[in-house]
Length: 439
Image 1 (cartoon, rainbow, N blue to C red):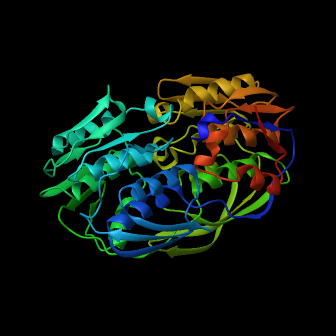
Image 2: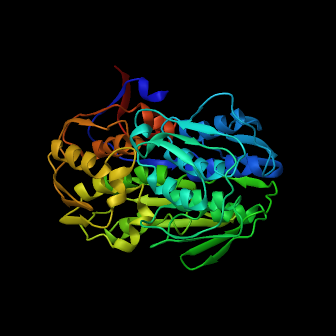
């Protein structure tokens, strides 16, 4: 359990980012390759798999439920699918570490099984809200016990699911995917309508494995009772991980970095759109589609940034990238205002408050609001900030060191391994003065 090891980052001021680097594979697609590959008929060959704690927790959970999985080795995984009804009861509770994606998607998938499963997680995951998935699953006929709406979740066996028509109260790919996975096992049609576009990796992968998915604007439907056929999945580099380097280059004079083979799924490119609105010099090349997912090389050359009002239609397209974008805002000329981002308060940490607190410690005028933040660009100083065991907070403050006036210490960074193994090594290679120290 990574969160039990205490690791801090020490970042020295200055530097610039240069060169060509490939960040680890996309976390969302890595999770889904294991889940859907396990339910498919045949062997799914995965390349570019993210060997981070979150995706490995998903892999371990399916091994525990009787799926033979070879790897991961150098990003390669072979998933020997057991078919839609081939999963077996795990011998023990299924531990999912820090992974909100794992627990929410598995809640839907396991609601259709004929055995009981208890899903647990680390301290951070055990504090995260689950009613957003358990309530609509209950409408479908699932029976799930929780700790006052939080993990652990015990998903009872053998409840016949019925398809429902459900409108998401918030734009959430995790909730949408959870209900679609339950819908594979439901009688009739399951239809989910979202208030704004969210990442569509589940729909793309289902289609790629031969399962019919009906997409009409912001409404997605599946019929229960189909089957999945194994396929090859090439996982692109994760745009969320690339974001830290995009922001780092955007704020540090003399930077010129190219991030290769990055996924540019249209439901994920809010960070590119927002940085461009702020004046960042970003160009795409080598654009192609691999395994149904668009990818490109992303080049960022330093250019001065200006504060903006972030368009609310971009918020769901950049929901995981905002901690890093807040650092960009802190280095921009003028004021940046974010609204419509309540979802950020229920991630691995309250990301709005955690970033506002840290930026204030570093001398930036940052004020949290109910659904966002107001940041007045200024001069980043030095100081000791808390990541609250949140990998994205930790990596965002690390990049702030490029523009800092002194040393920044970031506490509780062990969970960076959940999404970005070897972040420190790659950041050093690119030009960030960072060290990891055990406490």
